[in-house]
Image (cartoon, rainbow, N blue to C red):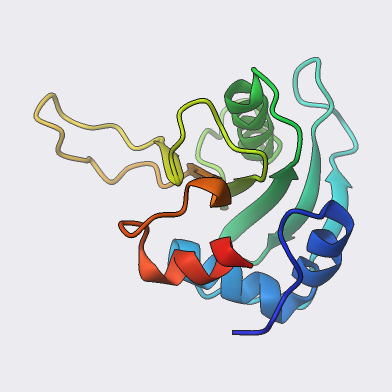
Length: 168
């Protein structure tokens, strides 16, 4: 793994993680996806807002299968779960080519790094969009996910590949 500056500083974070190799390593360790990208966009926004809020992404990359968004949040906002869910959904909806095409061509993954912590005090929390039976069995229909990563709550049960990045 490449050495990177602390995740706690937005400018340094964006500079380090805009390197495609660093970005791909981060995504590989958190999502088990091997992105095939040559560049990472910073401060990405779509030309047309989706809904009434214009979404802006700190780091954005996509290949032919996946769209990956990484955002870093330094200030603890009471609405950060809803804020990043909105951004995530905008990245899904923006792909709609017409009113009758409901399956987006790219799977969207959003990784949110909450550097100042969270009221729930969890290391990793996930919103999984895949429907499940009442018994909890996934249907494997929808792969989109949002990950909330809180380095402040890193602990011994945090999966090993995540720990190195969360300590950075």
